[in-house]
Amino acid sequence: MAKKYGNLINGEEVKSRKTYKSRNSSELADIVGIFPEASKAQVRAAAQAAKDAFKTWSKTPAPIRGDLIGNIGVALTREKESLSRLLSREMGKTYKEALGDVQEAIDTCHFFQSEGRRLYGQTVPSEMPNKELLTYRRPLGVVGIITAGNFPVAVPAWKIIPALLTGNTIVWKPSEDSPATSYALVKLMLEAGLPDGVLNLVFGGGAKAAGEYLIDMIDEGLIDKFAFTGSTAVGRKIGEIAGRNLQHPTLELGGKNPLIVMRDADIENAVAGALWASFGTGGQRCTSAGNIIVDAPVYTEFKKEFVKAAKAVKIGDPNKYDDVLYGPFINERFYENWLKHYDWAKKDGAKLLYGNGRITKDNKPKGFVGDPEAAFYGWPTIWEKVTTDFKQFQTEIFGPTINLVKVNGIAEAMEAANSVDYGLSSAIYTNNREWAFIFKDNIEAGMSSINNSTTGAEAHMPFGGVKGSGNGTRESGIWVIDNYTYWHGINDDVSGKLQLAQMDTEYIEAKDEVDIDNMF
Ligand code: UN1
Image (cartoon, rainbow, N blue to C red; front, top):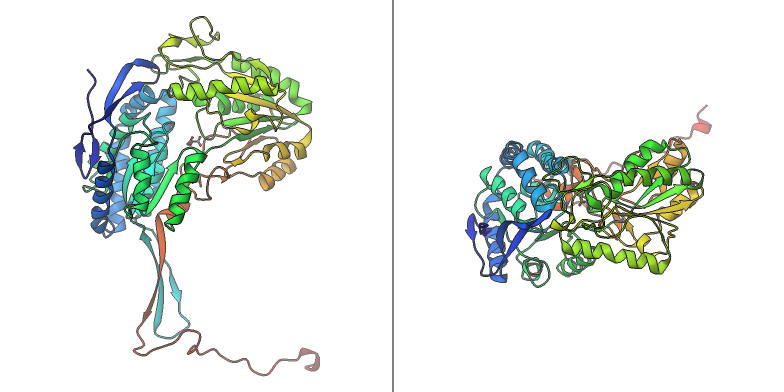
C-alpha cells in the first residue's frame, strides 16, 4: 500500500482532503506515493507562515545562512544516490542523468555557501565631506516558486538556494509529476536546519489548483516575488499579475533550440551532439534541440550518420536497464502532446525519415528493451523537408522528435536559427573561427554552445533566454542574486549640519586656460 504524504507548511506535515497518486513513469502500476492537493486556504497558510518566518530569517547573518546552505549540500551529497534513484523512478530519466540533476543542486549549494560570506555591497565616495555612501543587498520577502517535472531537483535548487541565501522565505509548488522527489528534497533541506516556515511545500496541479492559488497570493499581497519554470503561456499570465503588482518575476519558459552543423564540422562529433540534444531525456529538456540546421554540402552525410545513430538508440525502463539513452514520457499528457506533431507534419508535408509514434509490443524499434506498454514510450522521430514556416519548426514539442533543415551557408543557417519566437539555447558545429564568431554575435539566444550540445548548462553560468523563452531574468551564478534582492543605497552624514547634494557641493573651479600654441 502506497504511503500518504502531506504538504510541508511551517515545519509541519499537513494533509489535504483531496489527494492524488504519483506513479513510476516507467511502470505506471507502481505507485510512488499519495500526495495532497492543497486547498487555497492551505496555500494561503503556507504564504502566511513564510511571511512570519521572513522577520527572523532576513535578519539571520548571511554567512550563517550560507553555512546552512553548506549543510544542505552535505545532505544532498550523502543522499545523492538514493535521491537519484527516486528521481529516476518517479520521473523516468536515466540514473546517470538523475545523478547529474542532483549534482547540479549540489554545485549550486557549493557556489552559494561561500556567497554568504560575500554578498557584497559597495562603499561609494560622497561628494560631501563627512558623509558616507553605502549599498546593501536586501531580500525581497516571500518568494512563490512553481517548477516543472523534468528537472525536479536542479531547477528548484536554482531558485530555492539563492532565494534562501539572500534572506527570503519560500512557498514552493513543484510539478504534480514529481511530488515524491520534491518532498524528499525539502526534507533534506529542513534536515540541514531551516527554521519553521522558511521553506514551505504545497502540492497539487496548476490550473484551479495549488499552482493557481499560489499565483493568486500575489494579488493578496502575500507573495513579493515569483519564480517560474514552465510554459510560455503560463509565464505570460504570471508576468501580467506580477506586473500589476509592480513585481519582476523570474520566468524561465519554453525553447525551440537550433543546432547548426556547418560544412566543415567534425561530423562524428556533430552526430553525437545532435543525437544527445534531440533524444537525451527523451527530448524533455527545455534545452533540447528542436531543429537541426544542416549546411547543404554535408547534408546527405550528416543525415545518413544521424539516422544510423538514431536506429541504434537503446530505449526502455531506466530503472531496469542502465544503458538506455532515454526512458518513457514523464506522463501520458506529454505523450499525447508529442503525438500530435505527426498530424502537423502530415498536413505541412514533412518527410518522415525515422520513427513511428508510440512504442508498443507490435511496434517497437530494434533498440527497445522491456515492456513498452508498462508506460508511454515514443520512437525517436526524425523529419526532413521541413521549412521555417512549418508548425513543427516553430513549436516546442517536448519529446523525442527532431527536424532536419537544409540550408546553404552561414547566412542562411543564421536566418533559419533566428526564425523562431523562442531564444533559450543554441549550438553550432564548426571549426571555422569566422562562422563561430558570426554565430556568437548574431544568434538570438540566452545560451550558446560551440561544438557541443544545446543542453548541459553549468550551475554557475547564467541560465535563461530571450524572446518567448523568458523575460530576461537569469538563474544561477552571481547573476541570479539580482533577482532575489533589491539594492538599498544609504547616505550616512556625520557632519552635524544639513549638507545639500549638488547645491552645497564644493566643486573646484578651473583656472585660466592653458594655450599650448602660444606657449613656445
Ligand atoms: C531544463 O530543462 O529546464 O542545461 C533545465 C541543461 C540542464 C538544465 C536544463 N543543465 O540541459
